[in-house]
Image 1 (cartoon, one colour):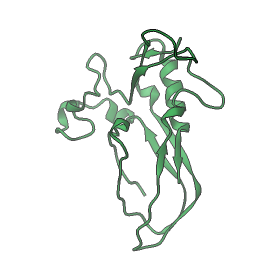
Image 2: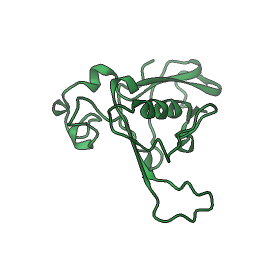
Image 3: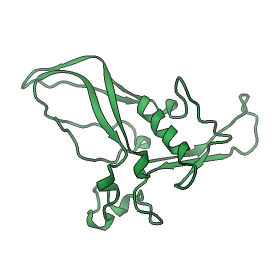
Length: 170
């Protein structure tokens, strides 16, 4: 069952809750897109009212190129394990090109059985601490700390892959 076309999730605002009605049955995974499919990514943002995930008012549309920023991940990092460095450098990775859209099949830790007419709860956890590393790759922020479109799209693609593997359904 398709649950939601598109939404804007702000991980800085605390937990986000959704309610859906789904057919009874046993579910083992959730298939979700991370980013915006090409047809919507190339749509005119002026057509969406304020409050819509694709509205200009959200500040996610790249005006210098066609499309939206899917993930806006900005912050500071410290490469000194003792934390004794001076002013911390910044990272700013904004993934948003059509090539960055990815599908994630998030396996449930245990099968989720839904009975008709009974309310159930499932939790999709986003492990932000895994955005920079996986079992096979690490984004070295001393090197890979900037992407806003352009030639180093590999940084954004790697971030999207890490985000995909940072999701957990329980």
